[in-house]
Amino acid sequence: MVTSPKKSGLDGVSPHRGSILWAEARESFAMAMNALRAHKLRSALTLLGVLIGVFSIIVVMTAMRVLKRTAETGLSQLGSQTFAIQRWPAAQFGDNSDWQKYWRRKYVNLDQGRQVEGKASLAAVVGIQGKFWRGQISTRFAKTAPSSQLFGETPGSFPARNWEIEEGRALSENDVDNARDVCVLGSALAKTAFPYGSAMGEEIKINGYKYAVVGVLAPKGGTLGGDQDDFAIIPVTTALNRYGRWWNDLTILVQARDSASFDDCMEQVRGILRNVRKVPPGAPDDFELFSNDSLIEQFNTFTRAVRIGITVVSSIALIAAGIGIMNIMLVSVTERTREIGIRRAIGAKKRNIMAQFIMEAIVLCEIGGVIGVVLGILGGNALAWFMKVPPAIPVDWIVLGLLICSIVGVVFGTYPAYKAANLDPIESLRYE
Image 1 (cartoon, rainbow, N blue to C red):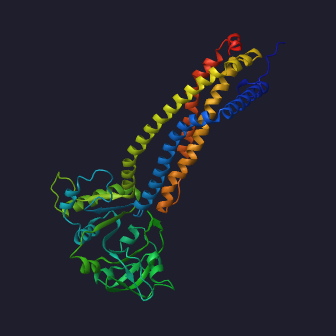
Image 2 (cartoon, rainbow, N blue to C red; image 1 turned 180 degrees about the vertical axis):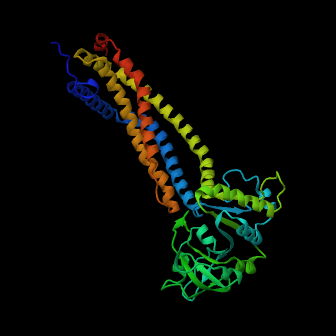
C-alpha cells in the first residue's frame, strides 16, 4: 500500500522548513544590524529622511487628534437629541465672507422662543438662553477673575444643556414669569465665590446687582484651557430687563422626545420659525439650526483638507528618503561585492543575499520611523500640554506610519538587493 507523505505545520510547511526560514531571517537581521553599526554616520544621515517624513505625519496627526478631542468637548455642550437655533452660526471654520448676511438678520427674541415652546408638539422641552455679561463676580467671601459669564435662561435650558443640579434647585417658571433676582451657579464659580462652605442661601453680586443663590450645578470640567463651569444663570426675563437695551439676541434650545423623532422635530421647529419670522416661501432660512453632531462634522470637514495636505507633503518626503536609501544601498552593494562573492562561494543562495539587503533597508527605515513616531507624539502633545487638555496618541497613524516605513524599505531596497543577488560569484571574488 502506497502512503502519501504526511504534512505537518501550517499549510503543509514542515517544522524543519519553518525553522530554517526563521534562522535565515534572524541571520539577515543580525547582518543588517552589523552593517548599520559599521557605517554609523552614513546610516544616520540616510534614516534622517525617513525620520523627518514620519515625524511630520505623526506630529500633525497627534496635534489634530488633540484639537479634535478638545473641539468635540467644546462643541458638545448640548444635551442628547438637542438642537439650537440662533441668528449666527455656532462656529465658522474657514470662509467668513457671509458675516454681513448674518449681521443683517433679525434677532431671535423671547417671543419667538415662547411661540416655539407653545407650538412644537414633537419637542420634549424648549429652553431659551442668552449670554449677557462677562466680568468679575463678588461675594462677602471672595471675588472671581474678570472672566465669569452671566447667562439668562428658562427652565427648559437645564435638560437641553445637560445641566445637572448638585445642590438646591434649577430655575422655575415662577422665577422667569416674575423676573426674580435668583441665580444658579456653575460649580467652579460656586467654589471660587464661596471657598469656605456651601453657596446655598447666600447672596452674590453680579455687575452691581444682588442675587440669591438657589442652586449649584454639577461640574463638567474645563475646555480649551478654560473652565466651562465658571458662570452664573439668572432668569432670562431678569437679564433682559437689565441688559436688553445692549443685547437681546437669544438662542432657542429644543430637545426632541427621542432620536427617532429628532429630524421631524427639527423640521417642525424650522417651519414654526419661518412662519413666525415671516420668511417668504422659497427663501433661505434667516436663522441657523445646529446640533452637536453637525458642529463636529463641520470641524472634521474643515480639518480633513489639512490632514490630506500634510499627508501628501510627508509622503513626498518619504519617497525622497526612499530614493536616498536606494542610492546608499547601491553604494553598499558595490563596496561589499567581495563579501557577496565569498557568501555565494560558501553556499549562500540568491534569496539569502536578497533577504540580507532588503532586511537592511527595512531596518534602516524602521529605526528612522520609530524615532520619528516618538518625536512626533512628543511634539504633537506639546499642544495638549499648552492647552491644558488630555494628551492623545494616534495609534492608527502610528501603525500606518511604521507600515509605510516597511513598504518604503521593501520597495526601495528590492533593486539593490536584486543587483547584489545576481552578481557573478567568480567576478565578485576577483573584485578589489
